[in-house]
Length: 401
Image (cartoon, rainbow, N blue to C red):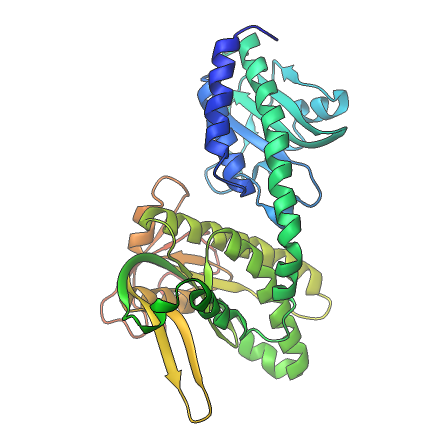
């Protein structure tokens, strides 16, 4: 194992430095993947496939770059021969001849040799590092050493992040089980009071941010077919199920209505805010699908429609003064917010719609589908709208009313 010690030492030092500033599992996985791609130039794709049964609680699967639309690595790679052989042998393996990747539309992607390296924590396999190389390439001994080093670093980093998640889980569970959704709003105000009380008196300021609105499709129909208690319990369970992915992506649950949420992504630069909003949207979409599967014996499926828009908005305190009490919230106002809300209104069938500025920010990261110019309620000029899912239920010629 002393071979290539200088390159391996430099790689370990570089990776340790990158991981030192984060305890967020997805950032760790993306950093490990990026490093593996750099260390093994012949790779077409590298995935770190988490096998921990608790993984979905504290992270989301990586998305495979070999597909033409978002497909998580766990679903497309777990049953491939290299992965299964590595799990069975409990050691790193290389498969010289592999099956091509078959995309949902029937097209295929030819692949070369494939390697898999288990990630151990004590005697348990927590994950598998999978590297798919280009056709005609071959794995060098050095590549295998790099994968072994990465597996050791991955095990330690992922467990540290998971332990941090476990420590805070009790607080998260409390917020998920709140009897009403309204306490989500004052949390942002309480954080300001505790950390920056001077912001309470400041005027709103212009900030680059992204806004995500989500609406429950069929909420009115649901309200007429079920009791108020049943509907309230279901909506609370659904929205509480979204809290983790929203917070994990850096979103701030800002305003609530009976059938919707407004989430602001404001803590990064314009690009990272948009990327985090889209990541949260995909997580919400997946959790909504899982929840519908659980509640189908009592409720018809309830789709979550999402609209995302990015740009400059006025951010700051909004005060609502009433006869009996004064309510404050930290919110974003302006055309950016208005368009995000209208996109959520326009979406159908659980679609994720984004505006032009968000599309620019995520260009090349996810496939987007141009729906053309669309007339939206309350907005004078037609807006170019893009779908991240290209939901077949969406009528692109529809005009919102």
